[in-house]
Length: 279
Image (cartoon, rainbow, N blue to C red; front, top):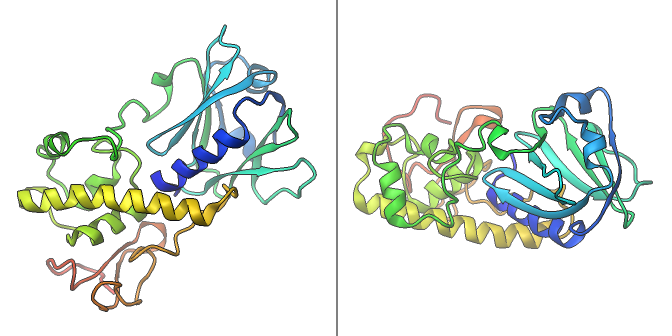
């Protein structure tokens, strides 16, 4: 799943490459395109967007929000890529990737494509952001929240710290992968319950969250370049590094879970209780 660092860089590239461009036409490719496109205006996805100029793109959590000109009938295009959604910049004659569902043709000859192998993401067209599922429940941005507010929002929560980081209403934009990285940086056991965290550990978590995300944005920017389809993660310390040596102490990285919902951590750097299914 693309998370804050990847989407932040995607947003930077889109600002350079597509903002100010007019959408000349749109292709929603069946059958997948009809599943990922959600027209909440009921005014026609292609009809509403064709002829409009891309005025702005912003990242909010794990969403990308596009606004348009003219603004007489204001609407937003909100992309929630979820697990396997990706954007691609290409030329119209470039071969389509498998599971390409929507293509936006721009006046400058660039084609912005939405690709989604599992068709789990959504492209919402709406007059109001309040209509977008899960959007209004997002917490503050993790690079904007103060330590004091972070502590205040964390205080009433009772669950395991990794799950709290990744659920979106504490802070927005952190998912499974970067939760692993932040907790490794903070030297915290992923399954420790929030009430068991000391004030010193919470301070450490906040610093690790900022440090990890800021450093990751730099690395993603370097490795992604202009190819926004990529999801660079080879630089990560523990996520998807099962069995490899911990960069800090050399202990083999442990795994709990399977497929996309795995947790990776170092049993030496992040000590905690026994965990069922640890490899």
